Picture 1: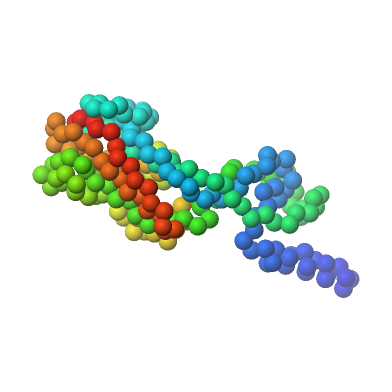
Picture 2 (picture 1 turned 45 degrees about the vertical axis):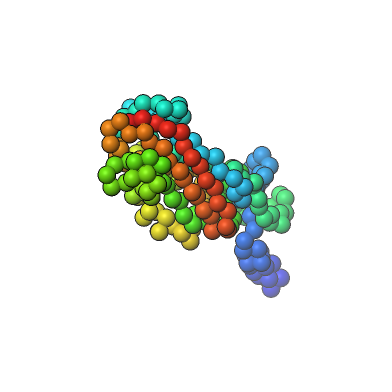
Amino acid sequence: MKIKKLLLTLLFTTSAFFPFCEDPDPFDCDCPPLEGAFFDIKGATFTQYRTGATENLFPTGVNEKVTIDEYFGFGVEFDVDFVSQKCPHSPGFSLINTAYACSCDSNGARGSKEESLKSITIYTLNDFDAAHPANTRINELFEISVGGPRPFSSYLSLDNYLIDNQEEKIRSKTLYLKLKHAPDSGTKFKARIVLRLSTGEAYEYESKTVIF
């Protein structure tokens, strides 16, 4: 009886020695091999988008004429390497019935291991309106969605999001920046975006010109 109690105690306390590791196949689910459940950001690709009634996104053309209902803003997709820490694995033994708990992780599903968003700054390169002449910061005119182009009603204030999430690790390889209202009629809109990470990396983008 004492031996049985000792074995059970060791079984339930062993996980304390590996608090930050992960097992990509904890329930022997026949999952495809993971490159890594976390990611490390190596670059960023920016795209300027227009939209339509269905809220689908389409890349804009140079000097494309748009209305505020047709224009979206910008998408950012991070270029990443996948990374992981592996747990020791004992095949063929599990306390949990695989019929109840079998699921597979995808690459990068747990987000960045190190990076958080330090800042995103958006500048208009032409006069936007009377309050925003050329080279003015226009963050207050944008909303953000992290993780996908969600329904537009769910977007958050860009500046508020950055303040509230400065210490949080980046959880998705994509984010979207939506313009809230139009510039003056006939304005040629062109923007510069500077994105900085907590690790010191910085990425800059200059958009195509669109005409409102």
